[in-house]
Image (cartoon, rainbow, N blue to C red; front, side):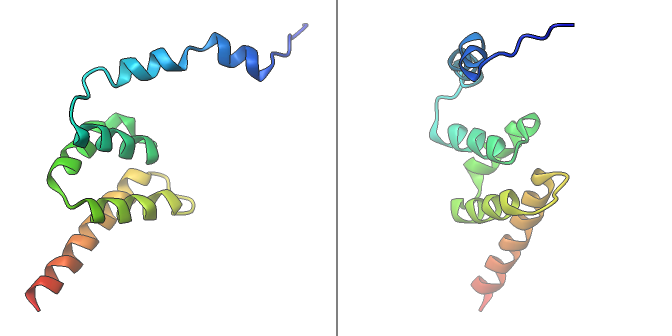
Length: 101
């Protein structure tokens, strides 16, 4: 039952992170696609990266950034993506009420 302890250097050298990143960003050609992908990574929700890319294209970046920061810092969140979407909705509602005044 001998387990060989591997150093962090060995683990990092055996796992090719650069190739994996290139593969995941293969079809990113626009800035909003990159921003949406980074949002998905920040919220640990790569499963829904298309949603974040769509939001990055159509929504105000200030709202998205505030919501992403809020969700990333939210303690004990089961789904940071869900908290993010809730906060975006709330911030858009606040923005609309300010515009009406």
